[in-house]
Image (tube, rainbow, N blue to C red; front, side, top):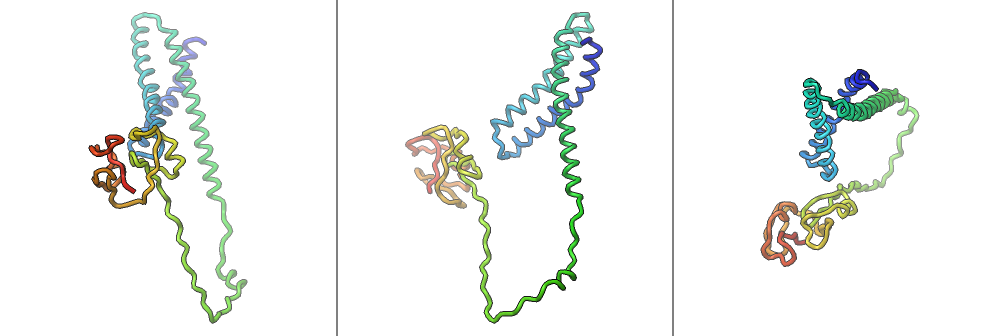
Length: 222
């Protein structure tokens, strides 16, 4: 592949390359700063890698361009970075096209006509219910509220015990994983060793406890 063909292909894919990594970096930063449920052990490395893939080729292309202007040979390195941009640019281009295709399918499914409802026709076809002397007392069914499970050592919350105990806890003095708090949700949590209180488990466990025989942080009582 000669330099002209390589330059044309790089120019073709550079928009998708930088655009794809920029979108990935922005999404990861939003997930990190908004404190989403996506573990930061995933989002931080992806954000760092995306930033590196944006910054390093840019710096290298500037350096190599200056070398070529000075008459120094840098064709091999230029080809390597050109191939990187072409490969990732093609991947992001395919992903963007797939995204537009999926959005188009969802739009087409949403615009399908639904059968119209005629209240007069339904009223004629249905008979009025017979009145009965005895009235049945029905109790409303309460839908259970979504439950959160908290770690008693750091206050991290997850929607299930399995997801809670799957991740590591830096404040657990007896192991490496989160341990579920066995008490009920309260407006105020007290340390079982010294009685200090806080409105949240994370706020309580972030402070040190001089009376904790097993560690140096507060532990919530049940």
